[in-house]
Length: 93
Image (cartoon, rainbow, N blue to C red):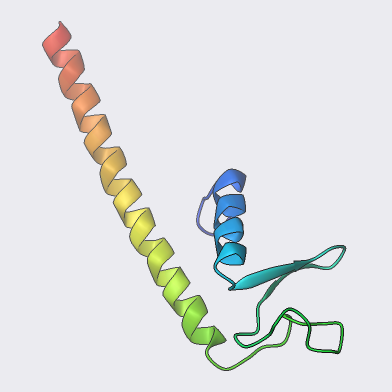
């Protein structure tokens, strides 16, 4: 949240989507982990989903890129809204 200036609600929604798509899993009392791509939910060791696997770095990089693009879009949208609000104030006078 601090690194990207995201709200806790945005992070919660992102985590829910990652879990829904199978990229992350939660372990009560332990936290959230990157899901193993071929895990069926239990690897037999009781710790499924918290082992780094090949391809994880690429997934993280893709998610970071998507987040950066989204932040750029939000910044541009915010600037457009500010411009419209400034223009609306001038027309209203």
